[in-house]
Image (cartoon, rainbow, N blue to C red; front, side, top):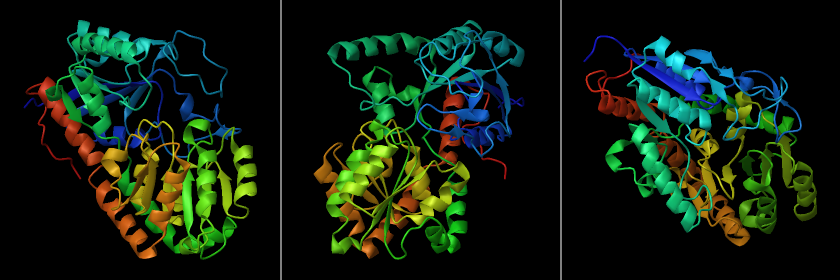
Length: 415
């Protein structure tokens, strides 16, 4: 093995709260020197998000613990403090080629493939003999694709594969997507979509002694089980459908008068609250946006969690709540379902937009308190094998394959 650290560049649109802990973990590897490059750093400051009626400030560090650089933008972008619209052309940055020269990088890891500046980065890396790794969220269920679009996508991946040396799969469906588009299995390494498991588990454990105090603070009646949903109140997340499904079961004596709690905000909030008052008065609460630092306590508060989205590339909130040892219910359009949800073991999977099936899933999971607790313990077991340790192992395996002699694929992290 080389005695010099492998120099790894990471390119992503902006600092992301889920990714920052992983980047710190990668940077802590003694034989990897990581530098992250961002097309914009709007998320590291207070900003007005499109789907929230308030300013958002992530109260967790996004730029600490690893080297980083914000690239210069070619496009003007929105005014300061406004979330930019992220798309094929935006944010449009430049300077990655010069940055690769300055950093003398061995490999470039890119998050996302459907942006012009990412394609330019791949070309810049290949001209310099730098290996390229690609990680993305797309799955066979993440979008509707007809025969023509499917054929075009396969052709696109044939070209993309010429510039990418390793594909990093976030889970089963993402791996299947790559393979369906002609990427050979030996070029794919599992680098699972994960969260900081230790952080969320400790946060929930620390919050447990204050569970009843938090319940009282939020005005939630003691003794009633809580079904939690966490996310933006937008159509894709199906909050109105959840209210309707919950209304069908909340009066069931076997469920012990549960309360449905939404942790989130968005354009559908007023409609959700009105519909809840109509169908299940005094049984639904909307908390609004919950800061990142308060999420572990919110997860500890619930008895079960539900994500009924009509389309969800992954659903990292499921990882988070599993770290609190809670049962999880998801639709079959949630990308993490095949990897994290075992029906009957730690939760349930129901067909998306099937209100009756959603209601039955809630009834099945929450109907027996003893079984519900066992499901929560099983969630904790499952997610304990789906974390940053597995990310590091997968990343190292991919780097060792495409940069032979530069890194040990099985090296252990320093404590």
